[in-house]
Length: 278
Image (cartoon, rainbow, N blue to C red; front, side, top):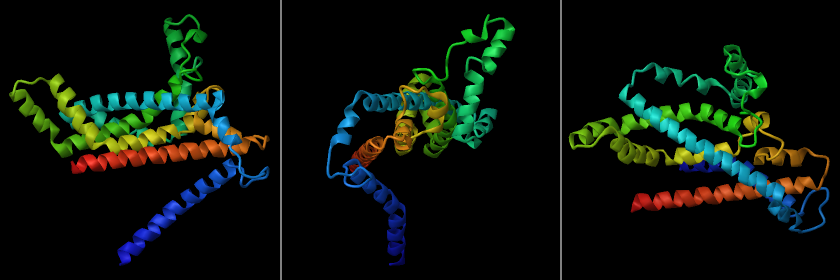
């Protein structure tokens, strides 16, 4: 009985503030509360389909997908190599990025990869670049290269270590020996056994960090452009402006994003549960 009470209290303590915030945002976005409240309206929700808001949503999704694909590709390759050499120096080096907060990592990327940064100056001193300004723009660019690099540097080491532990837990390298005995090669084992097993065992973690990347703020703030912007910066700007009409729009976008994430996670969990029972 005490365990049930503890569980209920835990759910209430963790869920109540989130639900209260979501309800407040929904009421504000529908014009039911707030300074300019005049009754129920869908005016602010229609704004979400404007070019600016839609562009921010699409841009955020693009950056997130590009980041997570690169993170998975790098992490799978590194974890495969680490599994073959478990005591390599790389295993220790991967812990270093985990100690860096996102803002510090974003500053590091900015000072290393900006046109006037360390890399461009080093190449200029070597004579590879005639002028520092000729260095390609990797930060504050349209494609968000600096943001993606920051995401990769922050999360790829963590995924690599977790994937390596998963490989050890599932004893995949023992399967590799069996695969080689049956006539398979390293490439076939990596593509047909290693990748599917690791991704399947880590799918919940991947979904969690995909959601995390969609909500990042520090890296896009420092390394992104004024337009297009990611959702977090767009919402923050709407909330902090002096135009009171922008506040309900920000709450509408926050509500839309939160509900969309909840529905997506619920669908994912339901499908995962059904497959586990199949």
